[in-house]
Length: 331
Image 1: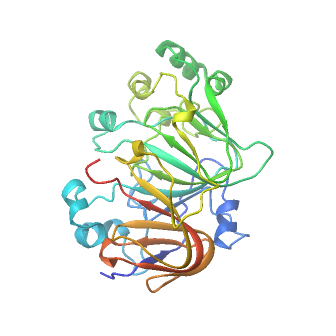
Image 2: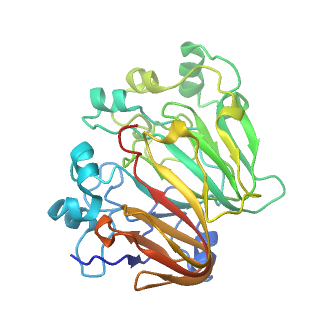
């Protein structure tokens, strides 16, 4: 396999909601309309699909197959010892052209018991741009909610009750929100994020009416009673989940708190001249500027996968990028 970082084209599988203009603008393709999500260096498929969502490398192989064929080179021996030939990471660019529905994701334990998968779907949102007067995310219940209340909201598709029960969070570029599995949430129109998540496409879509074409698909085939068991009904304190990083400038700015370590890592790199990176499987999203990583050219909008075998690669130039990595080993 090549030991060099690999630049990747857009990979935007069809979604049920609108968006994508901000992705096209970041990538320098302002006329493009490919969809609201770009799955970067993805070894994950859309729920129930065989190939949609997977990243294809320039040599024609699926990244998933390349990793399976040589996991140590791609991921490193310590990662393989803990996770096998599994990147344990999915990175997306997500541009909400409308408010997303209220939904949540299973935990590891729920996924193992009901979905035959070791991964649930804890995620984090790194806000890289916004539009509109009051860009807002919605995260976690404002107070404890009884199970029967949630069941009633879902059965009646009471969107107002569901949204009113959540914490509204005004966001701006540089904000990061950690979203534990089970916590109900929605992303508001005009919010553009780099999203890190566990590598699954499991969503329990509590607010499906007006969003999903198939009203039975909201519960992952588990039925309402079982699906609702994954909902975190306890109050969430936003100050424990929100981090402001816009004012921080350093060679590497950590974007996540320690509670994210078992799921993923992310930092914002500010490069002026050159900067060395420790060996790691990583995904880079360039937000500003231009330069190189190894022998690979970078510019605003570049998305790059870095194999562990690339070693201590050097970033050069004048640029800002988000670096996304798998879970911190042993965390």
